[in-house]
Length: 208
Length: 208
Image 1 (spheres, rainbow over the protein chains, first blue to last red):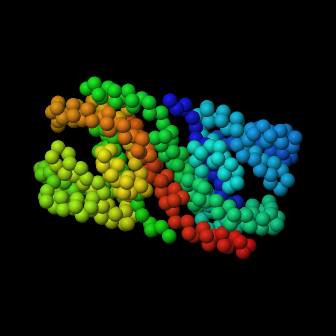
Image 2: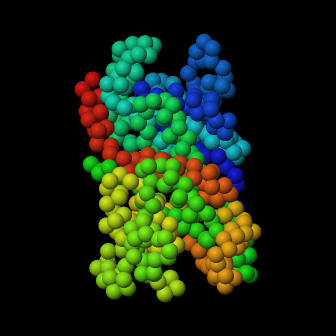
Image 3: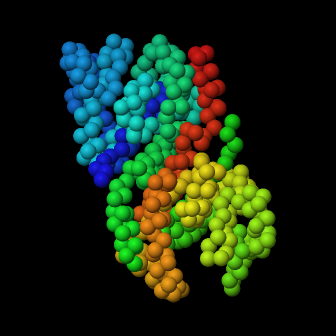
């Protein structure tokens, strides 16, 4: 008997692929979808709320949790630690929530090793020009940060083979529908369903 | 470079699961979906058209085609031969059509051996009572035929593990949407998409 459980859905892909807009749309539209809040050691920015935007950890606490193996994945990015708390995700899944994680390809590898039943979705913008336009348009970043993001693209793309699905995001509404369809289809997989009731079904038919 | 190709979708499941209504709805709704017409040696019934309902073969021609291995699957049912013509299906797939096949579990096994990239969907009615009601309601069959269909159910159900997806058909409209979602999601699989354009994408980013 399989416990009713939500789906663990990991989205990755280069900056400018539209991942943030995509998961926001999903959470907004579907009450069964929640976004996984990460733990981090970086300082809260103005307006950020602990437990909503991030779980803000001290460095020593983060290192303790790493030692205790309580993260599904963790990484150090530009001097700050980020991680996904396993028990937090598992509680959401046990409550039947479909949990969306926006994680880079290295983190996705870690998650896949621990949760091979996860669904791994790669998101790309429709063209290189569109990627550059989207990164530049943000305006919040200096040229150095833009160049850094662009230079990470080839390595990110090499990881595509580790993913189950590829969404070419040329329209957020369409991408949202595609991700929703992937989730609905995955929930219909034989291996994810409780099929014990069908044994009874066969028993009845045998009596006929 | 992967040729643009349609999906091969096999549906199976016990009589009374609503497979016929389901594939008819799919063909009616979606211009990209076609139903695979089988070859058979049985006599045409009133109103049946060659090439639309079946390809009507003589027994000697059917045996010749079996010898030439031109079928994706074939079987002898109550003295009549039925088969799926490989070249017919392949031509539809090459034209970008998504091809639906309504095949029993033994035939599905044969197809899976030859076309492991196919999508295998198992359809069941929501309960044993509903299955009996649906089979009996047809009225076109004598009690012996009904009993024969019911007795085949346990063996059919044993094959569920060979399938990718399970649809519990309690409403034809919902089942149709679920099958459509499965097809859309499968088309988004990394392994089914031409991702060669992304190599160029990475090359551009490297130059940045």
